[in-house]
Length: 291
Image (cartoon, rainbow, N blue to C red):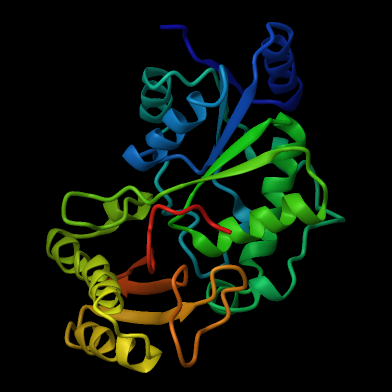
């Protein structure tokens, strides 16, 4: 196994990527905030299937956290992350300090439009501007052929696709399906915040999405009907505080008000205790790629 190359500044990153390209290697990129779990590691696997050189970034991006959010609490497990990434064949790990990513107050940022105004964007003002700004910087630093993202953060994925399309980045975005725990809970770095009883309760979230999907497969198409029982199930569990549950158009994330169509997504965000979790499920064939 080739040892992973760990770099912490942009010139070293670019030199390591240039060396890979000089060897004729294609470059894939997996951006993360660390605290790697099996879902992240499967993103690395997916990247390795597409490129000989896989670059992983580990950076907890302060621009995407509001003052009331968990920036200081966000888990940081660098040594374990690097060992796990190396074991999965990652070539280069970019682990910059904040001052490398933001050497001074930024004069320019990436500000998304209407796609960012609903759901997470409405609840977390400025969040997606922070996400897209750091992603744009990382794309310019790494200049990969392909970047791999997970479907769990659906709105983020659609915005990153729009970033690449609208600003003409020369790379492909590959979207990997959600990786789940044995009980169905979507893997997330924030799952480690859950106390044991909260962890048991959190498994209700994917079950609610599965109930909606089962009803759709059984022939229900009316959105109000599809969501009624799901909403009641969430309301019956006092430890779950939903932020939203909706059926949405897969391209715009606009809520479906009347009829749910094949390819639509059921999206869900909720707090279990103090931990906020996201999940989604595609109606119809869930293995189909995003539009």
